[in-house]
Image (cartoon, rainbow, N blue to C red; front, side):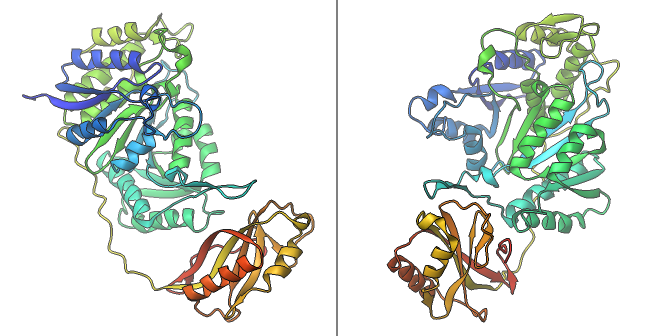
Length: 484
């Protein structure tokens, strides 16, 4: 390590500056070969009117260094402010979020001392795409976007990670019993890719029971791969059952840029009190050192950190009467780790990391034949709040619309069929999905759709969006309505 590696550093908000100061002190004492390009992010940048929370010149820093060590930030309350984490992940293609969750029992209190799992979360899609609309007075929409390439990349990353680090099993978690198309794509892709890794065990869990099992029997899991929202939730659950969310580090990895951070937030209520635990950010920094090819320094720090835990030097969040020997603040904890650099833990297994710079995982996409796509109908969404919201009234009026055979098939409200032959007990909002198809299932043209929309407008209805109903190689590419 003859030259220093330049990285981008952000001190963040709340407890961010305190834990970053402690973390950098440990890195420097351990001999990490680093230069820092410090940028400002978070609340003060938002309040300057920059909605992303990061100035353009800061993005330039990441383009240059390709490594980001980031403290937590505070996003101001109110609308108009974008998530900086989501923006960074999507802008730089940081598609893989890697969160190790390991028990450090008995030094960190946990009921699950054998836990040692890694959660690999898709980072760019799902509900975190941030595509939302208010469509009527009562109804808001958030689009769940799942792509085949995005699913394949993160799933292949999970298998490559398991292969690289000697993990034995990969578990996929989805909710495809309900979201049969979107989550179904992720599960199907998982099953297809799993065939390429016969040496690795696989299984699938529905996300609700999967989350319950993480909370009850986390030791049964090895590597978990899942969608964005689910992964965000279960990684906090897993971190908490292993002892504390405050210990968890996180890597966000793309083809070129990587971001490392703690999984917890900025905790402004304890900012400036010198009581925050810097371990989460420190563990993120350890992952960073391995990533940039300084694994020996990462091992030194990780072992000193575990030795500090073994010696009972604990911050207040993990302090245990009868086990901890001393309650310390943020900077005193960092100093305790520094004093133990070069020492090994005696009860816990010493850290060992693969030598050499970590290259991007092999996530090359498989060639995929383009399906034959045919338009077979259209869902027209209507804002309607008249006549007591009687589905039969809107239904009979819309039956007057007929665009060369493209005519009303059914109406749903919040996904439940209400016309024809709906149930009078079904509660209806002002947001109606009206499905138009041909009786014979023939292919529909855009001209028919435009004609239909003009007829709907002449009938006095406010259509707010449309969704085309396609088949792909003859397979339906849309969900059936309940009762259809």
